[in-house]
Image 1 (cartoon, rainbow, N blue to C red):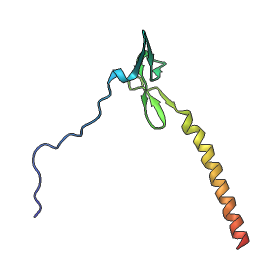
Image 2 (image 1 turned 120 degrees about the vertical axis):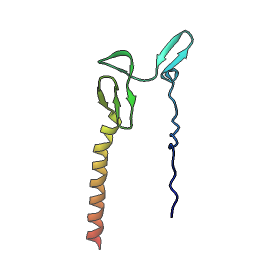
Image 3 (image 1 turned 90 degrees about the vertical axis):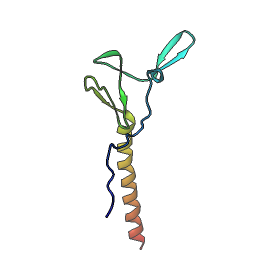
Image 4 (image 1 turned 30 degrees about the vertical axis):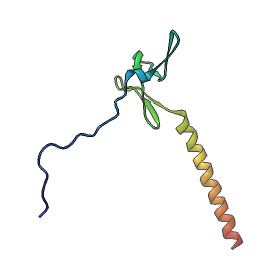
Length: 92
């Protein structure tokens, strides 16, 4: 029989994100690297996901423009592939 492991499971180690990564210092000025939440105000940053920006405090969500731009392009590419397939079927 297979032996079962008993006891606590090992926790996954995560990369801790420091608040210092949210700011960039140049001389005497600081620049924010991330967008802040328009509802909560400055100091509450939006989490960056693949397709959206999200506030964990109030739930505000922004869809990123890059994802919206890719969708029409993907539809155009599919149409081009269909036209190419139709042409190849006509020639055969």
